[in-house]
Amino acid sequence: MTAPTIRVATSHDLEPTLEIYNHAVRHTTASYDYDPRLMLEHQKWYADKLEHNFPLLIAEQEGQVAGFATYGMFRTKIGYQYTVEHSVYVHPEFQGHGVGSALMPPLIEVARAQNHHVMMAGIDSSNAGSIAFHRRFGFVEVGTLPQVGFKFGRWLDLLFMQLTLDPGGSRT
Image (cartoon, rainbow, N blue to C red; front, side, top):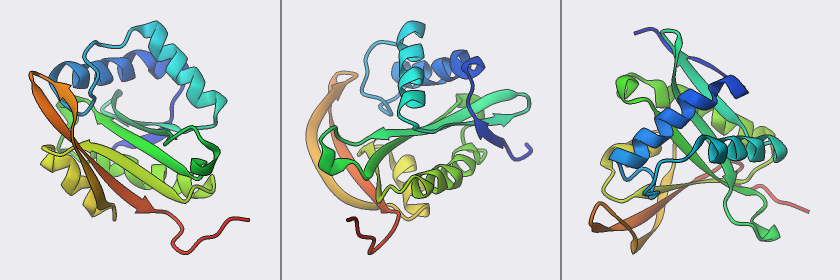
């Protein structure tokens, strides 16, 4: 496979990104949602990204959307304004082919350019692949919340990993 092309999403990407996300909902603990997202909900999600100037990056490979990456607010209180929480989802046919690795550097660079200080990842603690993936990009484990999620008939532990984007940075 050739390396994916990374670009900014358009409204034409809503259907394939919804398909990718809903596959994760149905089959994995990458999302703690139970029910697949409806297109109207996905359109509102996309509109929120645009309204708040949050990136939605697309990895395109072999003429199709192979994955996407984005971030949003970590928490809504003003004191968290420099922290974002990100997500990366890859189409099952393209997993293990470098799609996620192609999406992370530009996502991190956008976060730095937008003056964010920390990027967070909330990962199911049993997802060893995602944990190793994040470590490769400099994320460190900062805490685990035991049994805060429930899906597929079992309790799930949520692991937080953090990447400091501007070590030593200060705000005035």
